[in-house]
Structures are given as structure tokens and as C-alpha cells.
Length: 155
Image (tube, rainbow, N blue to C red; front, side, top):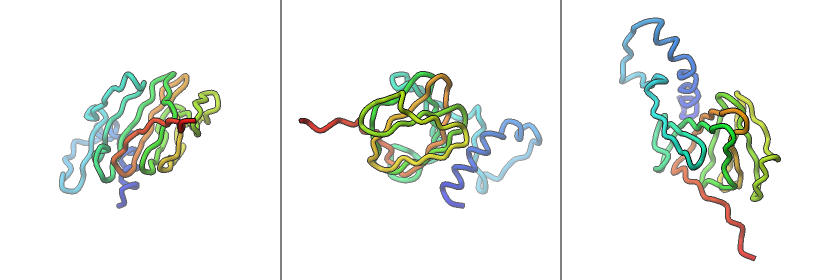
């Protein structure tokens, strides 16, 4: 199974894990299956950015594949920035608001509801976040997953 398919499978597992875990008390072979239940996922708050993250697979600070959850808190948006590598997303819950270009225009963002699939291409300037409701997004890509604020060229 490919990395992307594993990420999507992990998101699906998270959505049903609490109900499925109560269905039977069966031990899985850790050499065959690795999983985390929702209460085992470690969230890291980023109050200055207005979001929180949870790494599910890999390490986004290093070279290689990673998958994580990003949760935008209501009424928080990033400023225009870009990433060195493509990043892929699926909106898990809420509405994620996305804009593109170097000028920060929160009113010119596009609402992406739960179930939406998005790609941010390497070095493409964009901004994103949540408006009235929290938004949770599954993110995966190749690390390192750095964020570079967009700075207009000097005049």
C-alpha cells in the first residue's frame, strides 16, 4: 500500500477507531498493523499561529514522507507563505478557507468543506485558516515541511 493510501487509511481508522475498539477486545500483531486511537494522538498547541498539530507518521522536520493533522482554531489565518515541497490535504471536518497570492485578503478566500481534497504546490504563495468554525485537515507530503513567510521583493 502506498504512502498516500496509508495516510487516507489512517484518517479513516481515526474516524471509526473509538467505535471499533469497543466492538471486540482483539490484539493486533504489531508487526502487521500499527495504529493510534484518538486519545493516543499527541496534539501540540501553536497559540501564536492559532492552530494545533498532531504528527501521525514520519517526521515533518526531516527529509522523507510524513502525515499529520492540522487543526485551525476559529478566526485564525496564516499570512502569505510558501513551502519547499508539494503538500496534500483532505479536509476532515469543518470548513478550511484558502487564498493564494502575495496579498493577504481573508475575504477573498475559498471555503473548502469536509471531504475536499487540496494540493499546495511547492513554492506557491498562499494563506489559509478558519473563520467561524474550527477546521481539521489531514496533511501529508515530503519533508522537511518548512514554512517560509512571503516577503515582497524590495522596490
